Length: 104
Image 1 (spheres, helix red, strand yellow):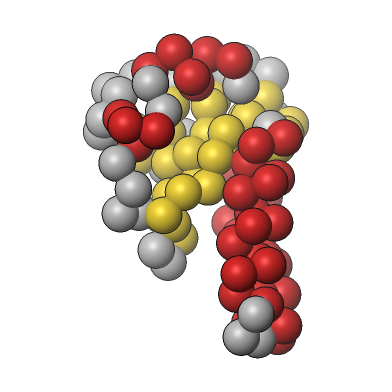
Image 2 (cartoon, one colour):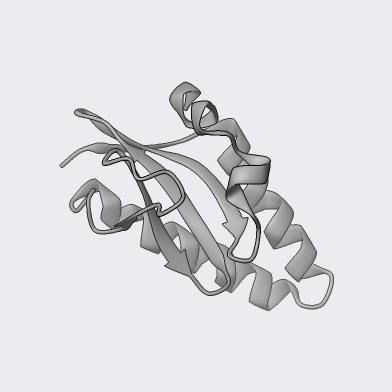
């Protein structure tokens, strides 16, 4: 079992998504957050459960697909670092150059 940690930017991503959903429904916003947290929690036991992020082709950079979002994380020997939560339609290469993931 490895430790699961969240980057500050991933926490901000989740908060922003939840705030947006809450504009229409606080109930669905809370349910969304809970489901994301449960999905991420599994990474402690199964860090390689997600697929490789195709744009980067790095063994240490993986993603879980959750609804219309990509939960991107970095697998390290002692931990899994949640790096970002982005809309699936976003062009990752435009917003996140390859070296952006090295600082997570």
